[in-house]
Length: 317
Ligand code: BDR
Ligand code: CA
Image (tube, rainbow, N blue to C red; front, top):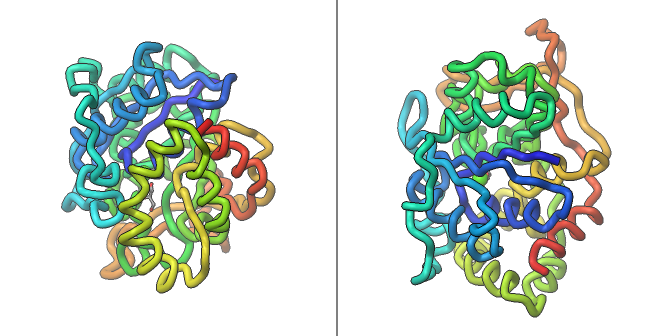
């Protein structure tokens, strides 16, 4: 399976990348970076760090720098959750430098890679959708050449960033709008609420991190900040009101890796609210088909959590 991965690397983006790297028949054609959890320079550094840690820098998975701010509006970040550097404020003194980032920009790379592999590439987007929106405006033919588009983002109810906006959509609502309305290819969405309802027990997380491997120790180090400062206080108690470990971006990745991962989904037309005072950035699901859109997306409802656990476990082996 050929994947192109667009990230704002973030701890759960790192988890998703490591998940894909551990699957033998998955080939990552490139990782494109965009603003989001942290600035795009940090995102590039974090991706290089993850690839190096997994011994894949030498195998040349190219990393491309993308857009540094949303199409409109102001830049959001999620340093409170992922750490100011995006990867848990746990620096590595031997981290690879930005000189290893490709000269070609992310938007151009997305267009080129999809055109070079028509019908073969699945695009996994776990970040604000700015790179993807720019790419489709430059080359409107790319959606028809994609095998599938897997998005972590959007919300069907409460969101996690604004009153009813999920981070990746709220961080660039116009880009999310363009992507949901112009990528008329098979589209799979892991919404914020879906991820909350698909959480894993903390006992699994403890065992996952307790594996006696360098990758598990690395994950424990970069994940500590989120677990200490956010999971227990904010998300678990107030927003999700339940116990459990969530790796948002990994659900989109798992769906791209394994065609049988999604067990149930809603097949609906979707768009994004751009003008609401409180609801800008909210994903709108057209249950009544009032928008008359022929293109519909699979909004994940239930996935195979046993498969998810296996993929996560293998990612740290
Ligand atoms: C999404 O926002 C980011 O903080 C995470 O990496 C994930 O992609 C969750 O709303
Ligand atoms: Ca992300």
